[in-house]
Image (cartoon, rainbow, N blue to C red; front, side, top):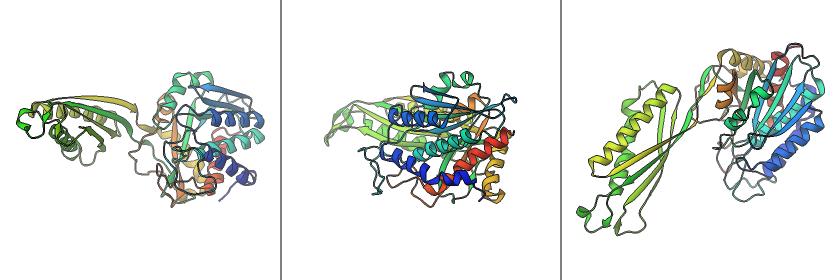
Length: 388
């Protein structure tokens, strides 16, 4: 692989940064240690400007090329937060914080972008400006949305934005992306069911909330199996069923929690509409009531066609064209980089993590072998997109 010598020389140093971040995971917007380390390093690298507190705890570093006559400004984004999981890897650099771990590789994303920032600040072999973006609260907090709403794009004049995420199962030395929808809209649902509580030995005098909620769980599956085109994409999963407190009382209420994933705005609207009809109708059939609350969280992560080509070309310059899948199958996971792609054109790419535990698994660990590959991708993207 044509890894730049300077980037290769940084491998051990960046790995040490990554493992330190892994040992000290922080959640959502409470990433004060991580953001402090990021800001401190960016200043030491000689960034032209370092701004903290964007979107609550986000950090942006500005690096100007040797020439800025082009007037172009591109953003490169990494996420900083961890997950509320207990790590089981047993590694020397395992999490030192009970109940928290970097189970999605955001420690690796942050370290790779820091390494790229150090290289770019040293070389400045480009015409334009780079904004390195370190985002909090990707895991459910909408940190990307908060940074955009805080005026980040306009404040720094960002014209295009790019993101990257590790991908377990994709071989080391491979990249994958596609134009159009790459990751799904991620929405939450809450279904509150009310019947009539009573003695379990006299169910005829009650309206059985457990029965109603169970029928709703079954019925909502018909949306994907019978209402969605077999060639379409949607997921409806009920993930929590809370009702009752003992073995001889039919409860008055029940609550269901779940998620909906879709790849188009039209499908998102359709699934929400069908859920309302099924939830309310099913409860009514059994004499009870049910209310659906639908929370629209992360929109579809949609790559802009032209920018997906640029990103694929940058990846190919690192690993060869054979190492880049430019038409990968979309995944139904969600990603709040979607808010940045709604604000500016850009592209999101997957980098191969190899045969490791899945993200969001307590045995996961970021593969340090891919650090120079990811750093090289960032460097090549900047130097080609902002060619001097």
